[in-house]
Length: 402
Image 1 (cartoon, one colour):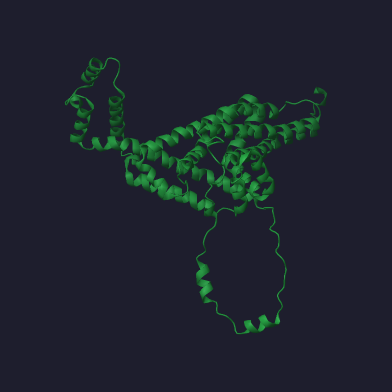
Image 2: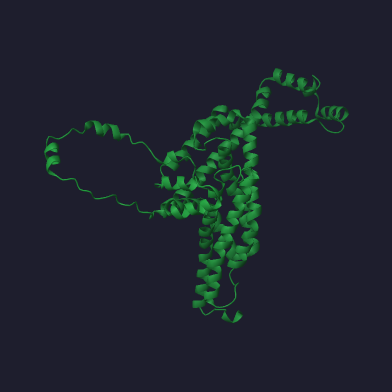
């Protein structure tokens, strides 16, 4: 699952009308008169309500953020293709440079004029054990760049790449800014907590921010939650585990891109910083390697927990009366889900070099995942519990089984 960006200033927007109206309002003559006759009233400060009744709005905001995060990830992937192919596309477009590049790499001057059979013969005679990596990279890069040029692939157009990076990042930033009001101070208190126990304490002291972050996280992961829950009810452990593994990799790969960007000091909501990635192929390759690692670890760790959830929720399973089955589904499923999310996030962060000793927000993020897991597990359990209730009402209670 994912948390909103750590750049909290995006949620506080300056209002254009502040200056305009403050300069147009003139003091009234009767102000002085009234101020001398009216006694100041000390109403005291109203305590800020520590409840957010718009958690549904936060859920929807998280759900709507997912496709925008996907668009940005796709734009960054295109930038990686551009950064890796552009050097080869440059030489493909200029035959003299192409010949020089091949000669400089160690190929004969007439290599590109040889037939495919003669090229292969030269390769096997010169390098019977296989081409050196630099020569192999040149051949593959030239082949891919030639294909991209022939079909006019926009991913080798620098203007398209830069514009796409900026537009998708602006869309994500705008979405973040238009979301429901966050308890910014509470979020800061949570994210600034140190250590496991201090993190847990911050949740208790800032329940409003905790629930807001949790609702957004569950919203963004809701497609996976729905699919896993349905697979669990219909097929049991195997189906739920498979969906959990595949879905967890896919969605956490997206979250991993943002996580790794922040690791390298890049704000995922800053268009200028994102656009500069196009000039850094080495960093782009690192970002995607680590994002895949992050998603892969999440999937590997959480798959067994998906299997466990499936065994609990599958229709027709469970022993004892209705009350016992409901207690198992509604009680055990959230706990299993929470432990799975907590374990997956802790292992994934550690796997990309952001363990508790390297990443100051490790414990807040890992523990928030557990809370989101509780909510997600409860959401998966409710349909299964409803089916049990319906079956009992229709005279299919299996009390005798227990």
